[in-house]
Image (cartoon, rainbow, N blue to C red; front, top):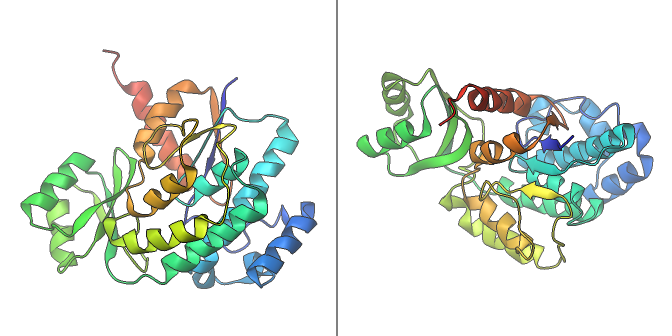
Length: 289
């Protein structure tokens, strides 16, 4: 059996997340609390949804809960997966699981990533449902929304666009007229995974230079390329580029799903489970050439 573990990104957080894990790993919880400067168990269990949604809080706590979920999964099943993948922030959990850095180094890096990204403001992000990515690009070009670009290729029917938009209503109406079922504004502070994040990426690069990141010991499919990291790849450079490049989740899953027998989402929520199931169904139903 060839197994794949998936780790969610920002948006999967929820009050109460990790409650079944904290008592299993008291030493890691204490170290994480000391690192972040607050009681992580208490924050996950009692903080409001709005507090958990703050980028500087969301990112380290999602990393924490997803990493513990992975440790528990391996301990319970005795199975080490052959492939790993994570959506945006989730890629850091995949790299931890693959041995690129230890648990605490990953937490420190993700906490700084969250802090840097939380300081960025301006721009918008929209989830477009029911319109293929190529049609979205055509519409953006036709409507002269040249400050918008694709940030996430999630699946064939769900794409996230981001950037600066002077007339959100016109954008929504136009995309719906072109065939989109929904155009949903996302509650984010900035246009993540676009070229507008390059300054943030440069600051992250400076921080990452303090760490020595190893090559993955398990195949990790990168958001940046939709392909596994290769031996000798500069892991830090790929993570820096990930900040201002679109998340190629659809392409990643189209690469890896035909190669595995089973997959599981580890971490809060089931956002990826829905997305990956749709991609898997589309692959299964596609005619053989």
